[in-house]
Image (cartoon, rainbow, N blue to C red; front, side, top):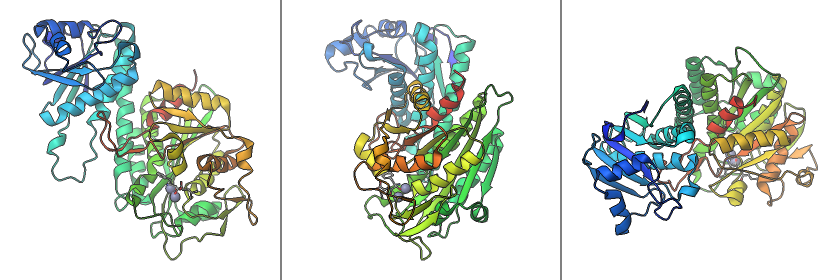
Length: 498
Ligand code: BES
Ligand code: ZN
Ligand code: ZN
């Protein structure tokens, strides 16, 4: 999708559809906030006011009304989209409004879409949100559909503003980079496990690295054995697909500090549960168990293009968790790279095992700060549903950096506790640690397990099990992979020096 910025009066905008966000009519200043909305209303003979009066349209979020061949305008259609109450209008709302408009127009053969904004001082923030919303809304997980007729892609999306400038153009460019990186991750995530093995994920990482000037190294099974990654190898051994540890390096031309960020993403290309096998219901969904790894790869793609002045190394342990004849058994004891031994009480708690070795390895590569992203537990879905990512951290400064990056990117994340008492629940009579604790607080004890392998480096953990995949699609996104955490991780690196 081509992204453009224009500064023409809205009656001059040439597009298949001109989108004008308008507010709930009950809003403090009334429903027609912008000059664009006023002009559209006047040109169309008071059409929007009449819509309000009729009660047919009140301006609630994502309500749509469309006028074909609007009088006095060059655009083929005028689409007004409800943006909710004006006092609750934020860039995050506009991101969704733009996405919903694009998704509404896509099946109506609207290859060129323009969106009118006049937000004054907030123009840059709003333009960013509109561009991201449009690119994310345009995404369709339809690679394997022969008939794609309902999902014609948008060719060009234009943000129409009263006055442009270098800052606005730059902001839009970075929004494009971030949203396209997020769609890159989403494409990896919806691939079924027969087409996305650990080796395929490594191939995709290599291609992306080559295209974006990143260094890429893939460690195979033999290398893992030499290093002593017993936990990662233990998970991999039940599958015919060999594991891969993907390492990507981004180095800035000029580093401004000594921090070296390590991003670690869970890359389980299919999680059957292993010998502790999962129930059949919804097992197909476990192809998205590599969404953390995909988020890290997506973030690295954006980082390579945005070039922040901080060193970033990404690690994605990629494995398939299967109950093959060589599979590890409940009760097996593995020795991790860190030297700690783990009793594998449940082979379905595999994410923490592969991350334990990847986190320890990241420290040996010189990472000073670690952030991992993983579809780690069903328990986080119980706690936070499909709305918030659960964030755990060993270091308050790093936690605040992650939360503020998430806020800036409009990704909902919620801090979770990690008191010492939770670690006390990880007791094994036969090894240093068990890989599971009791049922309660499962997302927290999983995080407490990971912390043992990240210590003493400041570390944060994002549990995205509830947010990486949405079965109930909101109006602004396709059903399926969300690409959550890509923008936050990239923003974390970009804003590090601030
Ligand atoms: N991949 C799952 C977690 C998951 C659950 C992701 C739902 C997405 C949606 C993880 O490997 C797992 O199986 N966790 C177990 C841990 C348990 C055995 C302690 C879980 O959450 O049930
Ligand atoms: Zn599992
Ligand atoms: Zn898993």
